[in-house]
Image (cartoon, rainbow, N blue to C red; front, side, top):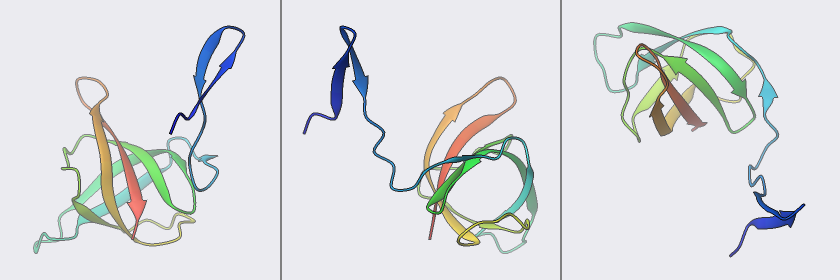
Length: 101
């Protein structure tokens, strides 16, 4: 299925997100790794969030499919989430997308 459209002679991709993203830039979040028994707390900084997930920056590398538990008091649908994508942002941070469980 082609999800693009032509506008002004340029191909543009349509937004296929289930829920609208709300700008929630740089609110600090604390999270723990779901499978980690020592419950070490890590920190990240949000970029945006929606009912289905959030995007954030963190210095901790996580694997796609890894589960986390959000400890912060963000207005989120669920405290459990799964990493659905990850990319290197700069020399210190990774940018990640989480989908709520």
